[in-house]
Structures are given as structure tokens and as C-alpha cells.
Image 1 (tube, rainbow, N blue to C red):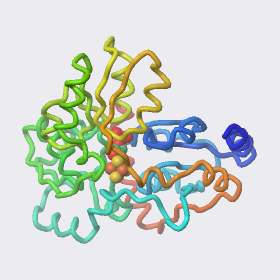
Image 2 (image 1 turned 120 degrees about the vertical axis):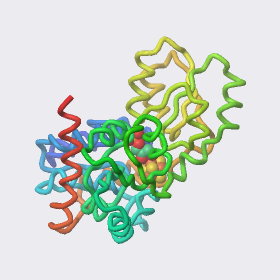
Image 3 (image 1 turned 135 degrees about the vertical axis):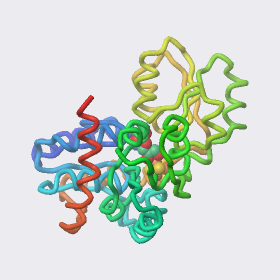
Length: 307
Ligand code: 13P
Ligand code: SF4
């Protein structure tokens, strides 16, 4: 593993490449990343990259967003054959035609798409958001009515804070986060009564109800850093534990046993090495889809920069 990490470091320089990775990537990939973050952090980072090539370790929609924000750069998405792409199943739950149908049914409503959508869905959306800025984006859109696509659970979380808008939900969900149950969280709490419960807003409302705090993955990282607590029950994908344990060896983290995103695990370190050598496979999107999809993504990035 040491050899692979060394070779990856050498090739990054040789290929003028930056390696971006999501917080759910395998530990050995997290360890070689130049930037590790949540969907918002990765999109922000992708919008200011000065290298020629981006090696994106995450799922398809994240790599596509990096490409949309950097149309002139090569975005490489290392994957494991025979899969052609590491797909987020939630992103596959919304399609362009059905979104257009919703828009027709609700004239005047703004479409706010979670970044966990395809480029085609982004191209017919007004704004994008991530789990860390969804409340802010929905409350800032000028329209009183919002079609929120595709995560019903994140949408319900937004509804709790944004009371002055009508929010129409889409019936999408994350297979990994809905496997985190109240029973499992409460069992962990019984075993670790001092632990603080922090959960991702993709969890069901029942799980959110018993949480002490609700955050995106990066929000969890920040919260743990600033908290005096020593123990945390974490309601999100288990691999975030690698980053948390590395940063806080003195703290304890407990995750749900089934909280694994198999799609994120399709990226392996051997593929990262191979992709750095060959600068393939690349993300390719047609120019018009990229142009249209950039509008809601850029609005989100600009709202973030406005803080
Ligand atoms: P974050 O933006 O919080 O990292 O979440 C992305 C995701 O896919 C959660 O399942
Ligand atoms: Fe998609 Fe869920 Fe995996 Fe996140 S954890 S990438 S939403 S399937």
C-alpha cells in the first residue's frame, strides 16, 4: 500500500492532477487525497482548481459536478470494471422528463435539486443544493413554491426549518441512510449513554427525531472537532469513521452496522493508480447539458461564497 501511495503522489505531480475524494471513500483513498470533503466542499474546491486534471473519487454525480464546473479540464473517475461508473442509486431515482412534468403541474415553482442528481436533471433545475446548504438555498429562492428533488428525507428536514414556502417532495431516498434505524441508534445509546447522537439529514424523520444534531458529513467533522464530548453515535456511512478516528484518536465513534454505500466502494486504490497513469476513464457530457446544468450549480456555489 505504501508503494501505491508513493506512486500516486509521484504521478499526481507528473500528470498535473489533483485528487479529490468524498468522505465515504475507502480509507486508503482518503489517505492519498489532496482534498477530502462533503458534496459542497468538493463542488467548491472543484470550482477553483488550477491543475489540468482532476481525479475524482466518489460517485458519478459528484464527478459530473466537477466536470460541469470545469468544462475545460479532464475529470477522471476511477472505477472497478465491469462497472462503467460508480452510480448513486438516489440520483437515478429522478429523471429529466418527470421533473419537467412536475414543473408543468406546478407553474411558478422553483426546482431545487439536491446535487445527488444526474446532469440531465440539473439542466432542468433552477438551483442545486447539498445537505449542508439545503435549508439556506430553499429559504433564499425568491419563489414561494419549491419542487425539491430527489431526496424526500432531506426535503422533510428542510421543511422543518423553512415554514414560509410550499415544498413539494419527490419520493426518492438513499438506500444506505434508510438502513439506519431508530432501534439500532437506541441500542447504541443504551450501550454508550454518554454518546451524542449526530445524524445525516438523508436519514428518516424518525431517526432525525431522536438525534441530538443533524449535519452533512463535513458538518459532522466540524462538530466533533468543536465538541468536548468523547463519544458519538454517528448516523451516516461508516467510512466517515476513518477520518473522524484519524483526527480524534481520543474519541469514540459508533456507526450502524449496515450503513455502507457499496457504490462509493467501487473506487479502489488500484484503479486510482491506473487512472492516474492513463488519465481515463473520463467524464463526458454534451455541451448543452453542461451549459444548462452549470446554471443551478453555479448559483449554489455563488450563494455559498456570499457568506
Ligand atoms: P454529504 O454532502 O453530506 O457528504 O453527503 C453526500 C451523500 O451522498 C450522502 O449520502
Ligand atoms: Fe448515494 Fe446514499 Fe451512497 Fe450517498 S450514501 S452516494 S446518497 S447511495
